[in-house]
Image (cartoon, rainbow, N blue to C red; front, side, top):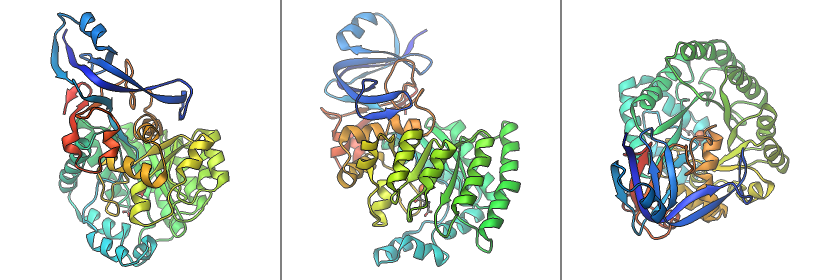
Length: 421
Ligand code: NIG
Ligand code: FE
């Protein structure tokens, strides 16, 4: 049987090695490792079969046939990017609110006035599944062209059973039909629906939404990977967050939630206690929260676009890295933060959050895969992992972060499971 893909003679191939430096994963500390003049083979199963010096691979595979050969002379190969936090299913943009926020309104001013998530909920409830699917496909296509090969996708603009299921079904259809890898998240606790109290909303999630979701999952109609709650003053408090996350955990979902964004809520401590795989945002996390996350190996998914757009304090990436927290990145694509590009996210993380370029790349690959429970199969170029990679038309991989925008020229090939997509 022929192999799927040979990427030959790349100037640099970026591996992420287990050798004791900065980047934590569940397997221990990790360090970027760049090998020069190398080739990479993906087998017919879509998994990486070999990586090594170009001359060795040439010799070993002389006479072997490949479905496709990419001559990467003068170019670089890096793992496909992983976007650990997105809200990509919705109808009704919020460009008008961007103007309000530029004029000084805060995120919560807009939310309390019935806009923000509530505006999107109204439009998403009214939208046909087919309309939502068409826009999702367009958005995932844009992400893929910007180098994302694994993306987390949340529901959360329904806030009631019917629309939450509609969103998850749309994500499921995308997962089954598109090449991009998807990790799907039930986020029914994204806001308290208009006219309901927190207690009523929590009861609806626990007694109506989660049991129905569980049935759909057991019937094989839906795959859902994670559970999310927006734990925030004026949204879900700590105790309702705890009961919803615990119920999700009991159903076999990974905990991955919004915490400590606008106010210190002790979300980090709660997540660590519950064994959360990841917590997102954390602009207002405390030192105690950071320490708890480091000990529990709960990843921090930092979202530089949100802090930038809402002019929030920057997430404390340096403090987290120094404390040994597993730091991941996400685009937070949503109607508030309209960004499909992980290279832009990495650029912002470096400039505004003072991450180094290797730290940002690890955060957008192996650590983001860890945050989604996929670091054993995704997020780095290693034999037997998925053949998901980018070929960059640049002499050094750092161009992906250094160049701000316009990445279509730079990202020459996006490869998912050995297929050029
Ligand atoms: O992660 N903070 C809550 N959720 C989203 C925003 C969703 C929205 O505004 O529609 C976030 O930034
Ligand atoms: Fe979010």
